[in-house]
Image (cartoon, rainbow, N blue to C red; front, top):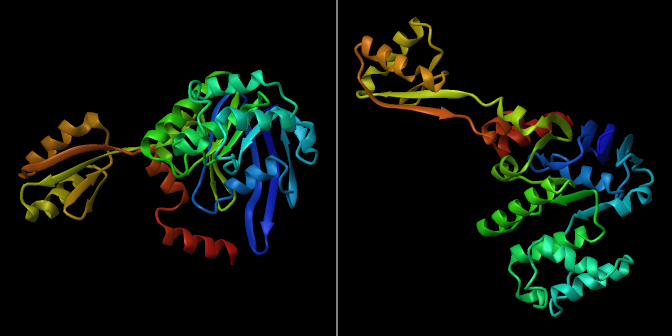
Length: 312
């Protein structure tokens, strides 16, 4: 049994279906990225898994227990859904000790989690002096207090500067390597690609993809962009390449050919044979972001139109 399993899980808010018949089976261990455009159902799914809201239909299990009885697994799950309200004037350690005592946890666990998130040596400083990145690490420390098997983090890098994002990414990867399962939602594709072993892509509450990061990256494609020395040669170059069997199309002031890097020399010869001198030849590999946008939509306008169609 996976760490999280859902079957036809559904949740609606009025006329909006936030999660739509979602069936998932997520493996234990490592970092799992939950991605999708705004309004894709990520936060709604997380709240259902944590027992904060009830589904309208379908079922789900977390660590083998039904979400209809969240008390059966709550002690084995740590979560960061919204940033905790720490007391600014108190130290990081004092804040965590208060949370630990509320959960009946020993004080020595506080020192353990401070070490895990890299705040040892700063634990006696008041939280109001912490950077946003340090505050977020402290929030993750609070989620780690019960020593959870499953850690669920909703947008943990939201609002952080690049340095803070790098800090949290390294922390997530270390937690995943420690044997825990970390489920993290994010809209930062580069961070998901760098940190996650498994990726789930949602669109309008529906599952678009679930699988290893490598499997999603395998969907990327390469193309080669050619620009002739003289713009007037574009039509002749395009016609020659298409006649020779290349998958070529004009894109503004260049020719785009679906081909891998090992075909670049052949393309250069083909252009030369047609009497065209190239000023520009570059191999471009799709990124994870390109694949994601192809799956979910490339602009807010495109998503809005698609959302309207889905609701209608």
